[in-house]
Image (cartoon, rainbow over all chains, first blue to last red):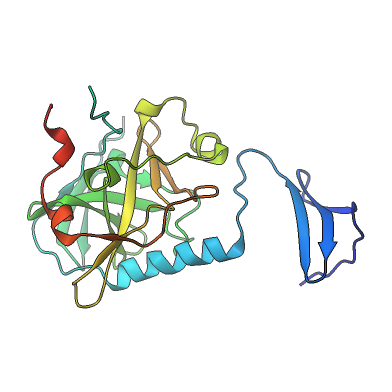
Length: 82
Length: 158
């Protein structure tokens, strides 16, 4: 892992369009500012990890299902009020 | 025009024939399955409520999912900008939403992942699992088993 030292208000660039700024440091907590293109998702790692685990559990625990598989028709959400 | 018919033998469901044009592309895979890019949405005639997201890159992988509004009518996910940008979604009528279901080992409890819905652009057939910002929704929201098995309660006017 690359390790860099930065001071408050200094930043690092990842590629050409992701910038991470050290906004504040307070004891063992660091506040980061992140500038990234709108198409790039930014999450806390724990959130991603939680979703990853849930997906793998969904596979492991998938109920035994039988029946003829047919292509499902996906639809946009239909508004119940109409 | 891409109407090529394909057949796969699925470990879970047996042989399945589909059109190449029905395949969904997940350019980023799914969290936990980053290398699985091609998925097929399947219904089983025995359980029409569930949509199985069947991987075509690894036929042993199939995730059960449901239309979240069939079980949580008030579900109101605020999709972050990256969902619309990365999937090139222009309007609400062109995407579908599915939420993955987890069943506990003894099948007594089901949970639904409301925090990270799977969004599918119906125009381009591209999909991505989207993590909601500052979400009040849980990735493991308990789901009464009966609710998932009854037909859509919201279709009374349709």
